[in-house]
Image (cartoon, rainbow, N blue to C red; front, top):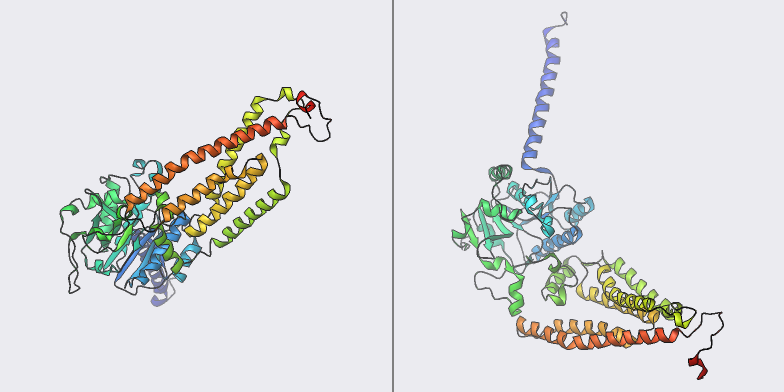
Length: 486
């Protein structure tokens, strides 16, 4: 090195300095991305100044249902002429094919993020464990490509355009109960500083009333109830500050069931939400006619997404039920023929009791198994049709196995059909009349169902007593006092 010219000696030093500078730049960039919580962005670049954003994470028993719900909701926004980007905040473990479908087929921007640790997880009990990762909503404040973001849950139904919400201030939300605002829809102004402050609050343990996102945000904006009501300026300018949103932007579905129509006087009747138990979400096939609004959600799915994913399962189930009916009619099995002793006097009362119990269990299974095997997110008309056909097929199997009277076994099937007709009747004056009609039908059907059950048990008892005098195949008949009469 001593014999090299000065320029040659400086080249390795310059190269090393350049590598160190490049390495430092990469570290700073990675740290900045980690601070923002964004691993990567997939989908088209930002095209608008505003965005509707939703969230998806994994680890619940209903991940697929929420995936379908997000797609249906996001696809419905162009139908109401929403002039904004559609963004999904997805945890890193969301399946890649789901992400690809939402970006390529639905045109969403998908932000892949790492789940935020929930320090309040111990406060979530029972079914509320599913809210453990809802704090991922805080990533909405990192969407600094947009001036305003409307954060929405997947169980919203948009009835009309709500782009005026982008004129609201730094934070706006709806109070659907007197004390706490609802985080199923809220407006925010993205800000990395606000996001950092919220992360600090998570670390220091800010008060959280429910252990999820709603309780945390209520703690961040405790005075929102005292803020003025949002009214969009006619000149299209944006407001500053925090505001309460009118109830029409988050109409609880339970309001509809009382009158069977919408009439929320404060603000436009724009968005329906379903903050009830998870089994009453609108995308389940049993939601209609049990809950009339379920058909509105499925109409949107029919128009925007279709049901191609569930059709192979539906066809397989129908084929299976057809095979069950055919085999049952051809084989005509009878379990009571196999359940008696060689000597009539030793016929066991315990065996008879077990056969009756098995018959009751089989009838319960005939009406419950088809319910659980129908894909949960199919159209209600399709779902109920497959369920009723499956219940009919398994009921025929029970009839032939236990040699029961067909009409008595199918009384329950007919009662279910009648109940669906009563609930689906479209000309009720209001929800109270509908509830009374359903109660009246159930009250009148109960004695008929009980009588059919009694007749089935009597028929089965008679069959067991009669079959005890029949020998097994290949055995000599035993002469009894009863047979001497003939």
